[in-house]
Amino acid sequence: MAKHRIYTMSFASVYPHYITKAEKKGRSKEEVDEIIRWLTGYTQEELESHIEKKTNFEDFFAEAPNMNPNRRMITGVICGVRVEEIEEPLMQEIRYMDKLIDELAKGKAMEKILREQ
Image (cartoon, rainbow, N blue to C red; front, side, top):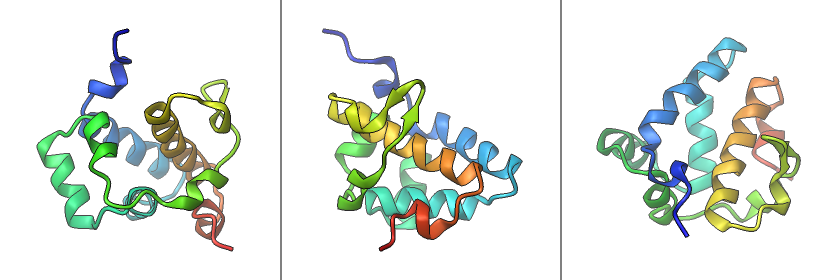
């Protein structure tokens, strides 16, 4: 079975869209980066390195140093599909990130986005 097209897309090609989506709603690049670091465990330097290297999504998530265990608390619909019901692990990770960026753009508080108890 062929890989989904997004798996081979570079993270760097989608990242500016995350920033644009957030900034259109009065949020910041720093908040987008904080969300991505929270989800993946990357440092800011590691995140920037993956952007510069144009790492694809498959490798971006495979190399993530510490996927946040609280990401399982992310629920809801993205692209018409419930994120908690996505069976393919890599697609679920990608959709978790999409969902977090959506929540940011919708004005949700960072504490809630980052699932702080």
